Length: 287
Image (cartoon, rainbow, N blue to C red; front, side, top):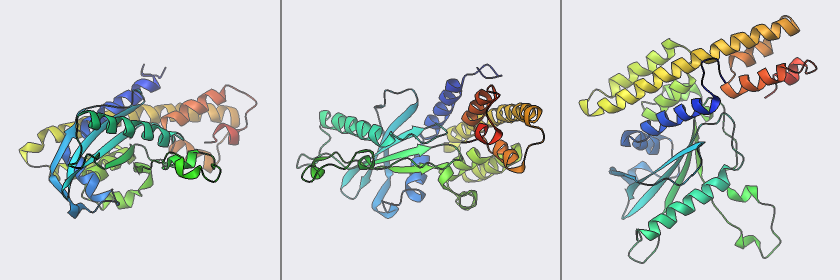
């Protein structure tokens, strides 16, 4: 249990709900497709046709998902988003994505959402990750399988997905993009009220039209929640810093830097290790 009375799972659930609200706005999906998806040229998409598709396929409380569709030339392209909120990469995410995309396609088949020649539409599977740490899990299901004997290789399952992670983009590149998804990732990087205020000021300039009132409100709610969460993490880091100094004396520069950059799960893990008096500092603060 955290000092504020919330468990780590509750904090993640709150993060999930904010992201799901934000990505329920077509403006975010548009900006995602325009600036963060290299496999489709924006000029080939009819972005004015973006539509939310009902349905959820994960069955896992750790994840939120949603689907959208948009016209690509003379057919629909289905965009499947898996919203991921763990601080560490999920090594089995490619397997999960294979299952979820198959369930989406099965749903489309049942609804008879097929082409005139009876084929299912293309799917663009994307994992969207929060947090400032880079995501490095496999994006190809084949990477999770051992090499099959010759003759069986062509029969192995295949599924790839894109990863769009805040931690994979330098803050400087996000600052240069007048883009709603970039602004969301900048809020994830923000460590101070001043950082968040700069992002919200940019958003207020981009979203002046009254039709964006709901989107402005959802961004403001996320920023407020993010700031409260950051204040809690800072307090935990200070407490852990004092405990470490009590045990090890003055901390080296690398340890100070690691505490300053720590995520929620890092702090929890280090606090548990601190209970073991035999663990040296280097091992205690290892990632």
